[in-house]
Image (cartoon, rainbow, N blue to C red; front, top):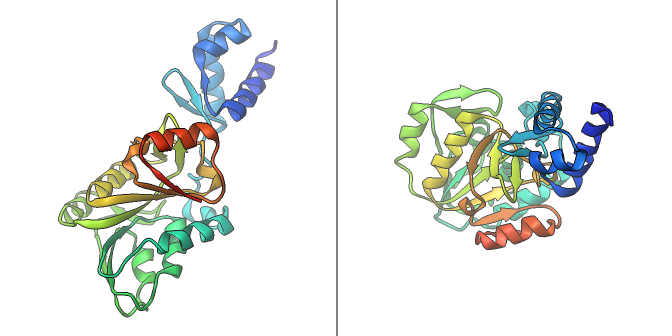
Length: 250
């Protein structure tokens, strides 16, 4: 079998099983693990999978620039955003992450209910200017332009003074073995920090993020108390979420 044919078969297996293991692929194709690792490196370089220890996972499509991502799965993001907004109660302190789904979410926040929004997203903060009874706290810092959020020491110090009820977190990947992932090392650390500052973390994930992974781990599935999706999840992911105590809203 030619290497190009083998790589195509690897992608087909990955699409079906949502993960591949180097050892199993080596035995299946009767080639060395070095050959399989080379295949996986080349497929990863082409953006077709995400390499992990011992194998590979489906790559998330949600790591494109912010402007590009705004038009991906827009109807699903609207549906998820509406469901998320209903979880907020009067008087709560709510951390809202940056991202395209949270940009939709603020459109559905109740205008007449008083509560506090803490965010490191300038666009989220500006989007709430005309909400008269919602207090907005913007966490300053260095601007990470890819996701239009602040990062760095200044942001982290300010976040450390917050005790929130809810954190609405965006991710680029939700996978039964890789957990929650994102495409930037610094952002992964920021998301972990903000999750630690809230009693409950709510993850919002549209279809392209499900059963996919990015390079940087945010945390295990147990990091979240709730996952909001649009549509049904497959059995392995549903079972992993249930074992981790995560409530699924779909």
